[in-house]
Length: 149
Image (cartoon, rainbow, N blue to C red; front, side, top):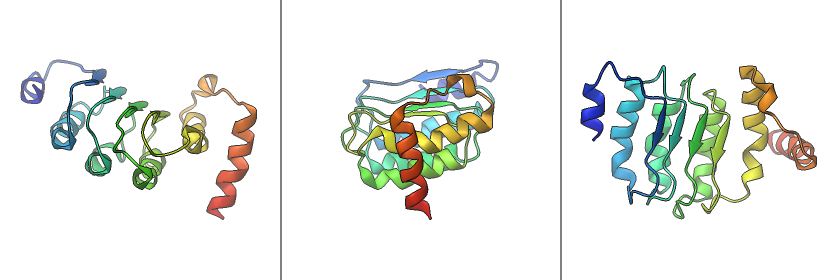
């Protein structure tokens, strides 16, 4: 499938949804190559409800670092993605313009833990109208800075 999509050079891919396909970490390289080929158009990647692990996130990292177009990554319901991927996800956020990472039903932990770094990207990208600030955001703001410094 990825090879066929890579051959269609005139095709503009904006969203990729490979959710619920029983895909494991082995498909990440093909996805990454497709992402590189379409790095100026892909805004959303949904790879939820598959069989991804921390190794898959590690393989995905180099394809997302420096990406200026991708805004949403959905890795939810991949139970073998654990807290070990938290640092990698923070690096992806820090070195890209991604604004939303769905980690629900993984074993990373609280989704709120990525809120502040993602909010910084939303502000840097100038898409502040998408930023909803709640009481827990203020709490996370201070928690995030306390853990860094």
